[in-house]
Image (cartoon, rainbow, N blue to C red; front, side, top):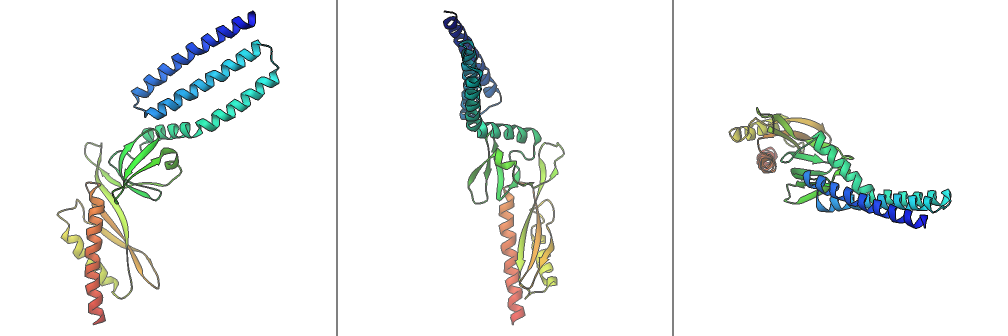
Length: 251
């Protein structure tokens, strides 16, 4: 009779506690604007924890051997850890990204091999709009394991958003045209865009070999969406002038 009463009391306490925790998590998730599936996962994890605690209490009251309780707890803990690892990992990584601010929405970033404009930062994923017009979602847990480059260069006077972005990209040439001529081509093209850009682009040689010379171009823009636009325009114009110079050399 005592065991049955203990069972009923334990079950009632567990149900009441589960409802209290679920309500709190739902309100907390709504307050910080968590995604629905993340909220559901957290509530599920809390329910599993409460269930295992209730089972352990009932087993102890029922006089089951400590070895049995430890075995059930170990199995349950392993299952819970495996099931919640990804969810909790993304949750913690998302909180870190939001608090550390390595980048923010509208920044132009490169995360590993993915680059583009940050569209949204959630607890689980960061969404990036790439120059190829694709929306890529990168899990926050993966972001912490990758190199992050934020191309913000100067902060505006208010201090809330970048005033200028500095984007770097490479252009390679063979050795048929002299370095002096290539420098002249760069300067000419850059002057043509001075009125459109907040700062004159720059360049320098970063490596040279038997086949080609590679230049690093520094492109300055005010809007992140202008990066892909001016990169394409400047690259095309440089190569057009370079082709003309190669033709003159060959003649």
